[in-house]
Length: 90
Image 1 (cartoon, rainbow, N blue to C red):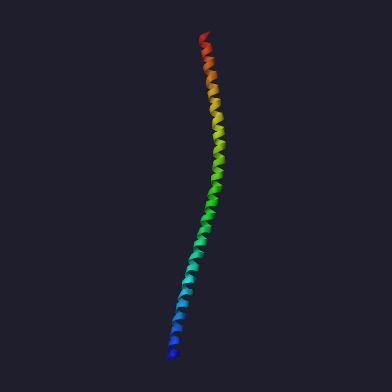
Image 2 (spheres, helix red, strand yellow):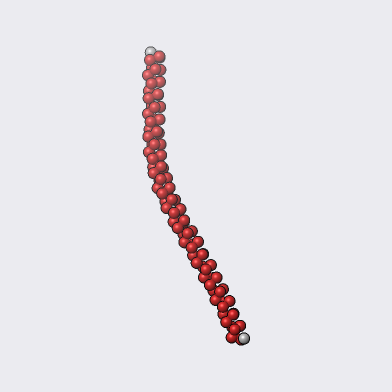
């Protein structure tokens, strides 16, 4: 009887260890899935960062061109106004 009780306790302990191993395997699968998802997100963020850098540089070029164009417009408008004013004064 004493041996049978020990075997029963031993079986219960083995069942507990088996359950723990199954739980660890499930947790490992979840961690693997999360890490893969994290890698995909990291890659998407990196791609978006590259696109943002390209947009910022493109925007800077457009801003520079627009600023020069605006200055040219006002310079021409001032010259035209000066020519008209000088023609009216004479």
